[in-house]
Length: 36
Image 1 (spheres, rainbow, N blue to C red):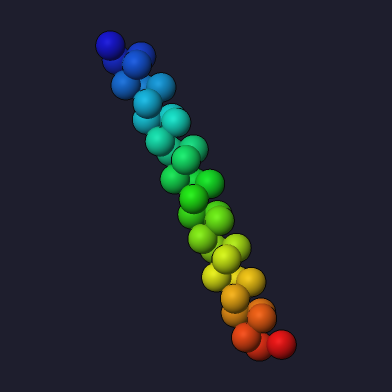
Image 2 (cartoon, rainbow, N blue to C red; image 1 turned 120 degrees about the horizontal axis):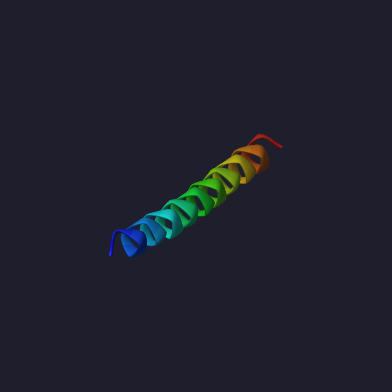
């Protein structure tokens, strides 16, 4: 049971990291486009 919870936590962390990275890239692209 604890192993299942750790697997879920790892997947959740990986998904949130990817989501945060995508949000940051979108924000940076928008900022660069506005400045150009």
